[in-house]
Amino acid sequence: MNKPSPPIAPAEVLRPHTPLPAYYGDEVEHEQFLRRIFDDTAPDYDRIERVLALGSGSRYRRAALQRAWLAAGAQVLDVGIGTGLVAREALALIGSRGRVVGIDPSPGMMSEVALPGVELIRGRAEALPRPDASSDFVSMGYALRHIADLGMAFAEFFRVLRPGGRLLVLEITKPTGRVATGVLKTYMRTVVPVIARVVAGQRDTAKLWRYYWDTIEACIPPESVLAALCAAGFEDAKRHVELGIFSEYTAVKPA
Image 1 (cartoon, helix red, strand yellow):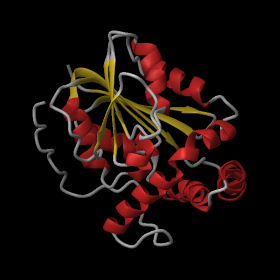
Image 2 (cartoon, one colour; image 1 turned 90 degrees about the horizontal axis):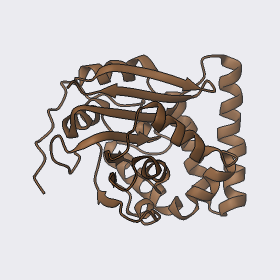
Image 3 (tube, helix red, strand yellow; image 1 turned 90 degrees about the vertical axis):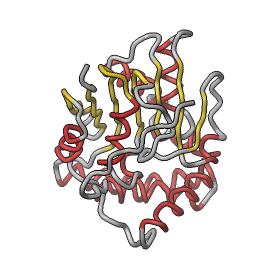
């Protein structure tokens, strides 16, 4: 495999959210915290997700990939593959001529991926261990809030895409209204941790879902994400929203 070209670092680090001292101190501790909590909760992640999404998560992910024009036969790079929830739907769309490569920093999460034919590589969004122009489609499902530098990650997405290649980033975004924000915050920080304890019986699993809300609440606004995509060189950067909170960021590498 060809060695990837070193990414061009942006002049200033663009973090997806402000630091959260309740969970970690500096960026080194942040990375250690994420790896530990995702490794520890990986065996229960899919079961909890199915309960929270009422079984609709797979249909939504497939619809989002279709809206992003994922085509049959595509070479897909799924960044932050986790347990393979987005990759599973991508496989159904690309068919036997397509291929999925998954990258994630968590060995625990990747150990839960049960998708024949998917190549799994340990790595980070900011330094993808893939050659230049090697993918037709890059996806990232609900991991934007967990990376260290959006500018560097988006530059890497741009680098590994072929000209004309497409990008889809799925994320949960804080609602615009105060009432809706309050309802979602109560649900994510109170109800979801209780469900997590009942389903999984693991304290760290509940902590993960509380951390999810705190990163959602502190996350930079959608317009900043779109601006970062444009700064990385992407064209036609757009945001589609479902149910007021599910953001689908799409963009295209110029042909």
